Image (cartoon, rainbow, N blue to C red; front, side, top):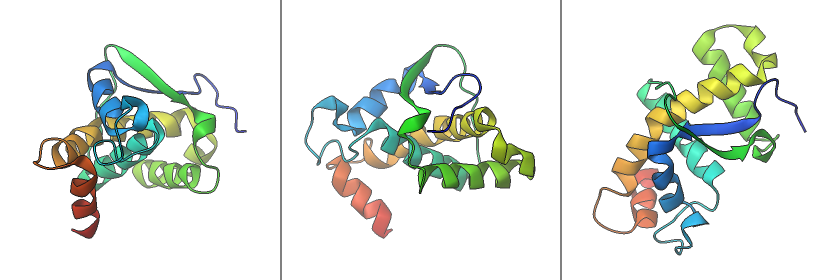
Amino acid sequence: MVEVKGSDRVSIDRNVHDYYIQLSRQSRSGPEDAPFLLMKDVFMWSVALGVERGKRRVVSGSREQIFRWDQFSQETDIPALKAIALAETGDVEVLVDEARILRIAEEFANEGIWELKTRLLDRQGKALWNLVDEVRG
């Protein structure tokens, strides 16, 4: 387990927490309505969409802590988050600063969740099939 200096909890804006619940099995819905197993999965897709848009949004105001750093996969999630942080900052020192990596990821996710909501929840049809359309897209 990697120890993060500062908080090791992943935070999101409280006003988007319901979208994380809706899109994950936390909602107790089936996979057609909640295509992501974990909130971590929603977070990682949101990060990717924030990066795709090239936008970050500071997590401000009321925060909701949705999971801990140690839920990230050492094989896939953490290397991806480090690569994103390195690309964003251009500073190799960021690779050893887990708190900074996490903050950058949270900001990309805070932007990306709005895009994920638009693509999966605001369109007609079930969220899973909207996700499949996006992946095929």
